[in-house]
Image (tube, rainbow, N blue to C red; front, top):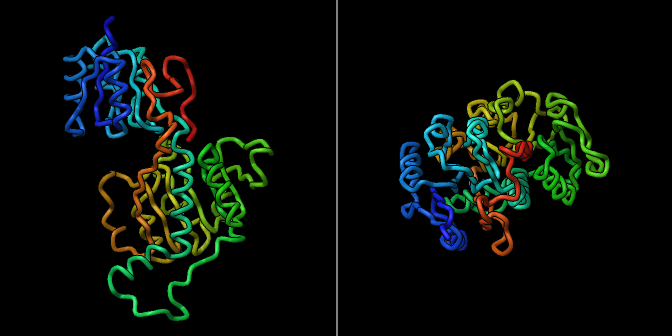
Length: 322
């Protein structure tokens, strides 16, 4: 029996590659280079691929989709996010798009809490002081941080990840406020205070965690105007998408002290970093590659035609909320 033909654009974990070789006639990218649009199209045609397994580094534009072979039926992305794929163009071609929802919820929430605590307790500044050989001993006012207990954590985006962040923050005695596209049922809120708009939420945030998807409406949302709504000395954490933040505006507020510290796991233009962040001691630029547990994890699974439990292009499923 002929196996389905699969194009894999990046190097994958060994068990994924083994599954691909077992269940598909697979064409790999052993050099793990980021392929250009022309290279993806050429390989898809040469292999007469019926499915592609891609990563978030692959930009699947409408132009690229239009040039794919007619036999291609599925594009599965090794990511939760899907903004690198023109889903509308795929739907027009009848190509199913699949992602890996929920596999990184716990890992991303852990990272958000790590960055928040690092910012409030000034962990990055202390680490840098010791590594630079500039620590001369303890004194009474050395790197005084803030206690999270009793502080108000604002969560922008109360989907799976936002709720997981809230769960962790409650363990540190924080009070939860949030804004979401729709209010959660009382049982899911668990006492969190809902705000109908971002403008209502920001003034009550001692700390803010961004946990919403990047969309045309949210890109650049955290700019000078919105950041100015935060209280003086607030903390800012982003584990969502870098393009939601105006780097120049955030750097300016850090330098002025209006935002006391920030913890960033994502950046606009990755892997490049805005040069203004590097010399900023109150900013933890900690790129953590969140990953699910090594044992049972959906992301490592590759069932026929998709690595996801959700295909939402041709079957009219909603876009992922986190």
